[in-house]
Length: 345
Ligand SMILES: *Cc1c(COP(=O)(O)O)cnc(C)c1O
Image 1 (cartoon, rainbow, N blue to C red):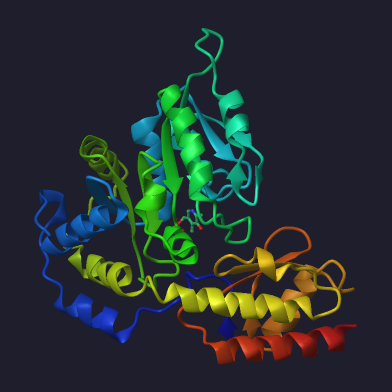
Image 2: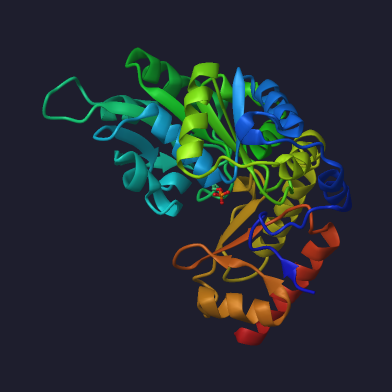
């Protein structure tokens, strides 16, 4: 069996999750009659400090619906340059919402609020209206970096001055919450809508939640239906998502400790460039350009030796810890890395 560090999406549902699926009370959710979905949506809204929430099939769908309900065709949304919505969602915002994107370069995932202020368009017949700002926390491409609540507050204040909506791509929001030792609302109070994935570090097989005020979520429900995301006895997947949300949050601290341990070990390997102090959560990105073999050669050699990881741009390799890898697995991965690197040089 390989040790799979490609992503925290590779986890398999636990025995308890499978049992919860078997036992789930269900109804037709398009009719609004699935009690398990209701319980999930109410619990998520409460934890996220919002009036309402909507269960959706994926993070991409949650983010996309957030754009559709808060921006219109011909308008502009602001995104961090390396954000998931901008890089990895197949331009859904242009394909479906018809919005133009404008990117802002961040530092470790955090946009400078003054840059955001400068990017908001004036009222001018020549220019698109700026309708929405997207923040990502943790920031995937920035190596699972925690974007400070203070940064989000500053951006939110500017957004409000200009009547611009703020959306949080919180695919891994609970990693932020656990790493910062606070609660979700420390962050979500500074956004209008938030999307959180149950299928990443929280370990559910499928699903995300989109939360916001009641009126916005009602409109989101219509968009979900339009996109073919209205589903029926979906309590069978809401049940493991509910377990993920209520039982798998605190344990993210273990993933963070494992990631730090991995980063410290990688920093010992000559030719691997990484600062363990920058590993805030469960994502470890290492620069391997000094190794003398390419990133792709390293990934392939590790794969042959039973360690799976992923490329993350030229010269970069990403490792992600999650609930299906133990501290012992990390030690095995490190020992294998030493061997593979020594063998290749
Ligand atoms: C995974 C991810 C998403 C999208 O989630 P899917 O469920 O894969 O569509 C969105 N944003 C970030 C930051 C992610 O890591």
